[in-house]
Length: 140
Image (spheres, rainbow, N blue to C red):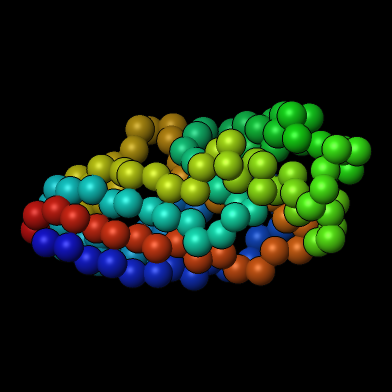
């Protein structure tokens, strides 16, 4: 059984955002799958998806600060600067983190470890809402 849907997330400020509950709410079709795979593909070039700690918000802040050190704004060697100082670093961070994830489906839900959560990594200061194309494959 295959299913595909585009999820529209609410706009978020720059940072790492735990979106596990938002994705589950926007994807009630998960409940019809006993076992399978959910592929999530972010339709943007200045944000990313990842899985990490879901309990301590310090992890999200530390991750964001570390990426800002790795890929700072206003570096003198940047050429793509017309859309603001956060734009080119957002593209680099998106490539480093990635825009797609594949998660197992088990008993009608995304299956992750106890301390794992799905993050939207928002790298722009004034981003609009983001979209994720979700493809479900599995058995009922």
